Image: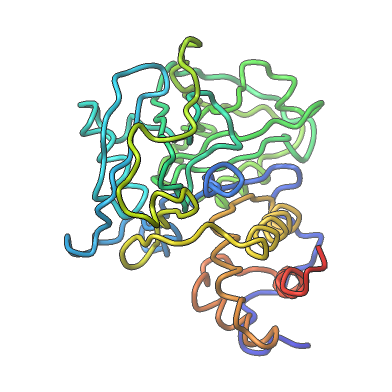
Length: 339
């Protein structure tokens, strides 16, 4: 079925931005897979996860208290009153008397650099937040012998792109100084702080093959191993719904954060499939972006209606037509329980 006026550009299934070089959001998924959050955009571009948007009125902010520590070790702090990732980082920075840009990313319920536990668009109401801060800087030269570097890249929702995964046997895997969790600060001398994750993927893809390029990386300050991961917060909330442990705080790009039930089986399966499609078609992984797409398509009745709604919500991405059809199919399959 044709997509009509929605289509913004022609693209084929083979025109990936980056093969085997993905971008997720951490974020955030969601935490980790479901926590991948899209990063702060360039000026004038839509922010998927709230970066750069004005905060809602104080009376609309959630009155929920979360507990937090610095991942490399610190006393426990208490934070509340945030509605997006940038505000969350600000609250953590205030609790520990550090600058918000020092925070690279957060993990939920573990101090380790566990990319499956990245904080993203949803935080369980009993989750414990660990903040990983900037540590050692390193600069290296990489000889690009293949079209793909083998990096999976995510971002932190506030302008930092960092490495989520390294494909075994890839170009990046052969450069042992490149580590999971490293922030990519510069590519060939160009500062990429504040650059969207899919744009970083494109920059890496467009680097010429059989040439050497320069990377500036920042690794997170290492955690000490005596600290055990935590599965719950230090205190039990008083509200019955909060106390069930089956609710999450959903951070939104527009409007206040909301308390919602944990994702349904349909949502979890659909988001995972759409995230896989993002990787396949566009070389990015971003579970919060995938969750937004599933939410957009939940009540649509045909692919044209879905495509137009997707363009209205996420028009900056200019998704390939084939990708939109496959996402529509994935949402339908999840509704019918075919996964």
